[in-house]
Image (tube, rainbow, N blue to C red):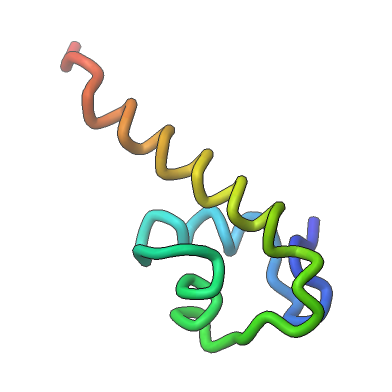
Length: 65
């Protein structure tokens, strides 16, 4: 699914980028070489970044098996 139609950024691409690049949606877009255009995607993008980073943090805190 596309998160950002203007820049053709897919959800999977954004989720990977969330773990590789710090900052808000604007900063992650910049790291991907993109710039938000209409801005309608930024709230959804921010939510995706938070979800991915929280999942990664939980994984780091989980006890090793």
